[in-house]
Image 1 (tube, rainbow, N blue to C red):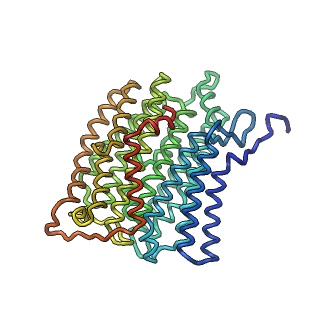
Image 2: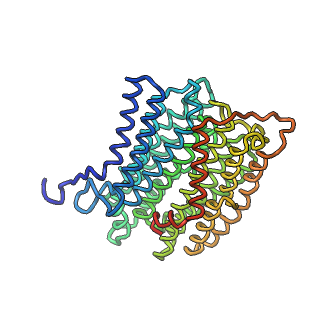
Image 3: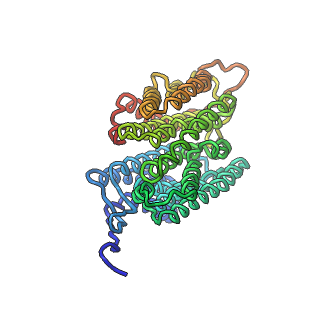
Length: 490
């Protein structure tokens, strides 16, 4: 069998960011093996992440670059959107490496394996934004996620860390199975896997409207909803975050969640029928933000509080996707698309800042501890405590955290424009509920020590730098939100 339509093209320039990310993983192992110096290994990982971000920005500028194409169907499309995702994932890896300084210096974590796994996960994130078909998308999500099974369990001598790794692995395998089954059923119903072709085929009246198709769509959405810890696929998140090393929990809460959002956005906006995904995502978003906020009110452990608030934030992120799928108006869909991307960007910056503050105020290698362990921390460590309080207030959506405030306003505006007023009301009510635990945690940082002895150490330089950078970025984005909206295409 031959012919022009069956000749597959390969554009190596489009693949350059993925090559750099994968090459970083290999180089980290070689440096760790040959030099046996932790500083050289970490420096290699840092340099690789920086070069990956630069390569993504360079390749993504201009027209889209398509590769692995057969006819008009392409499995890999790298453009402005892909460059934004790849650069953001690389910057998150940089932030996590900075947060990992005290953990790696403590000597209980193998530096080479740690940096190698982060680089492998970064490779999955780079490919994810450019995925043009369901198989590439699912493989990229798994490459992003698989290294985290090991990273979660890297806290030696901790039973909680081992339990968290097993829980994460088992639930993730089930979610991946659901996604693959849904993709297989979609292929059986339509004969296509490329996202753009799937959208065309499912919208074509020539394709029969079978119950099989509806089941396939629900399975794909359910499997990807696990990655963002959406209700009812959220139970793994609090235990996994709390058992993982703090920098790994930060990565789970930011890069891993961002990957799930990107995957859901790709299939909802391009491939899956809106009449099925719209009601499902709207319901999931409402349940996710409500359950996350209500359970967060009762949390006493710091990381579990951040985990449950992360579940609630996932609901805010998913809400515009429900409006995007339900709305038939192109302008409303564009606004919803931009709102999802903007909120996801704001969230990962503020969440990383919050975890940076917790890492800075806890002993090296320790878990997040209880909220009472942070009592009065801002009185002893003024700037770090203020940074953590700023991140919490930003996540709550209050000034001076203008990034979080703008993000929530953008989400509500997109929901109203998309005709989902009831969901906008749910978002507003949940935003008020969230104020209770965010403000309580922020106030605790400035409370007198009382009878509880707070545990705190001065932050390492790398941790302080990561906290400062993420805080400054959040402020900049808050004052110049149009930059993110333009990148998102809104």
